[in-house]
Length: 318
Image (tube, rainbow, N blue to C red; front, side):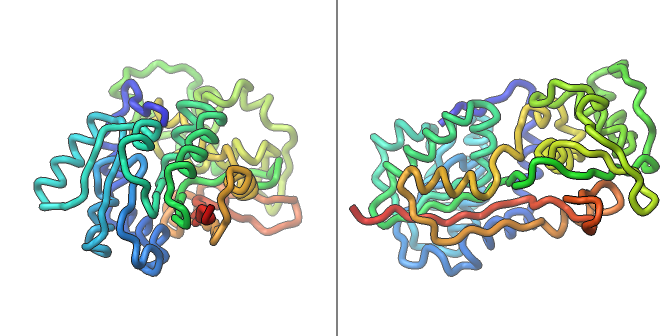
């Protein structure tokens, strides 16, 4: 598993976002299939357990299940251990990676991987992500289940993207601000201006906004830009993280689409039990509406990208 310690990451912001009650409730609903999944499971490992908030919620649903969280990030593991002590949890939190876990921890009946795949891809590589999934398969007990909940990329290659130009300022083009001014500056920009900044800062784009936009049209009185759908999706999913901008610009959200996930898992040997993609309602209402949307073609209705994928897959009995 890739070491996800990142220079400059503000873990207070990270934990506040990832451990929000509504976020945890949504994750638990997705991962446990509203409490129906994992019935009878005695031992589960959470890969990339962060501050332990997800396993705490799991313990409330499955009080008799053996729960172990593994992570390599010292700051988050310290928070997880504090949570364990403060809330009298039975879950264990261990600093280790998947390679060592395979040798030192018993084979689990279930593995959960929440918001981890995109970080392994971003801070490691596609090969390292595939290796991580293979190692997870190898460690899983025969008949065991792995549940992945993460971000998701589009299946189409290109899209028509509308960006609100009237909900903030145009960009000056220069990074004249001090570090402590960055959040206020980025938050003051219109969505269209934020896209310009995104194109300059995003680690996976090596083109200017003008080079990235292949075409431009007026549709229903609005200006739409013809751009790669994966970059449009990455922008829409990260544009509001102005308080942790520099780190978010290193993370790829739209790296695999639904078919990529399924093909990779099946090639490894998993059998897919369930796969769902959806657009988070809160994100749609608070980050997409009146800000940005897409059209697959100029004649189709505006739409928002899927924000999440949830895949449950099991390891067949050998």
